[in-house]
Image 1 (tube, one colour):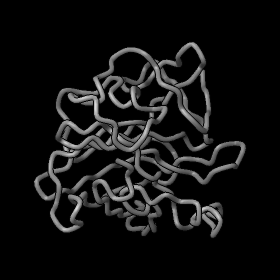
Image 2 (cartoon, rainbow, N blue to C red):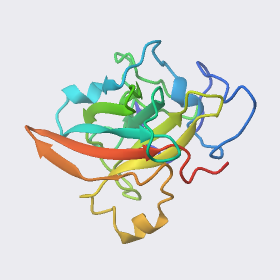
Image 3 (cartoon, rainbow, N blue to C red):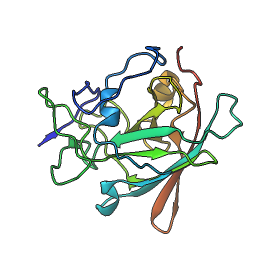
Image 4 (cartoon, helix red, strand yellow):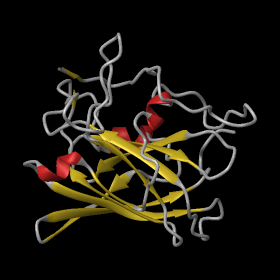
Length: 209
């Protein structure tokens, strides 16, 4: 079973309250409840998605998350990510532990998803595979990302990770970017068969509220 979508709706079950105070930061977004679906008890700064074992362009997405001053590393920040397979689909694979079953509307984040929590230096490392573009080609290939700070502020989405060498990451696309927590455009550098993209994330930057 697979479903591809350009916007994700919330799915009931295995969720957490947005905040302890009811505060809303960053505005509503459709994948909020998906953030915690199947989340493990122990999360480190390093994660390898099921896609790493598959055929395709191997990716290491890495970088540092800073506090709002843009200088102080932010430890303990949860970053949830998910993306399509190489064909541009969010695929549900029941045999994969992380896989999310489609809801009644057929919506899912699939199985190429995971979590990291920044280390004492604010670093994170995600090993995965490069996603494909949606069949509609109405958006560049991308990796969705959600942030949950270690406080009572609710989770919020940030700009997708997109790739500088993607022809769809053109001037028009860049002009429309919100730059939530900074630019999501990463330049990939290849070494020993792994393409590394580094992204700096600044908490709260261009996040409403």
